[in-house]
Image 1 (tube, helix red, strand yellow):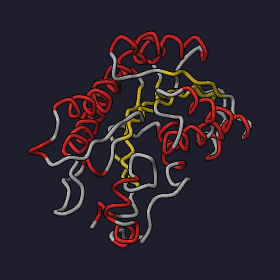
Image 2 (tube, helix red, strand yellow; image 1 turned 180 degrees about the vertical axis):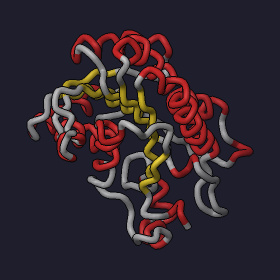
Image 3 (cartoon, helix red, strand yellow; image 1 turned 45 degrees about the vertical axis):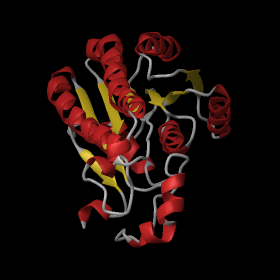
Image 4 (cartoon, one colour; image 1 turned 90 degrees about the horizontal axis):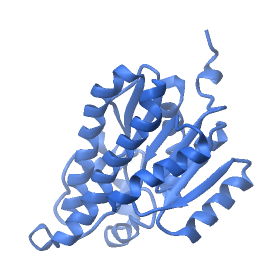
Length: 260
């Protein structure tokens, strides 16, 4: 029987983190690397990836990056193949790449709807499918972690956000997680989702400015927003053998907002 510290260890494991150049993605990549995993991160902008890899390497983490636009279907398979070339195998997949768009539902541009859906839902399906077929299913082992949002658990209150595409996409990610967990459990693959609440980031900057940090913090039982370490424990749990009997679950990390 392994000790608890061993169950949470990621020594010898590999991880692919999409949207890993900044914000929540970089925080999670850092956590996985600190536990011993070798990391490949992806995003669209090479300069941001270079900064993120330097940040990880400063912390003694073995990391590299791949610049890719996951909205384009034809990019997915070559991207996963290149990640496999570097890592040898993919033990952990963190589907974090995502986008948002703010507009009233009656005026929401179709182009923006498609952009959000393609990145937030379609790309998660395509990347998971490729990683599953090329690495996880043949080896009968894998940890898939989909980043959803508490926006996928409910709608928006009057006078707050107008993000119908984003909320819809994150609701889809939540049920995608449950459905894939049901199908791929027989392959030894766990599929879980982290649903963050409000964290300061480039994506949430506009909302935080419009609604106000203090107002959003007061709406949380813990009275604050998420910080630069609040996702670390959850992603390590779902990526490690500590969660070997957990699949199809959604963990909200939101200071208690979704509980009240």
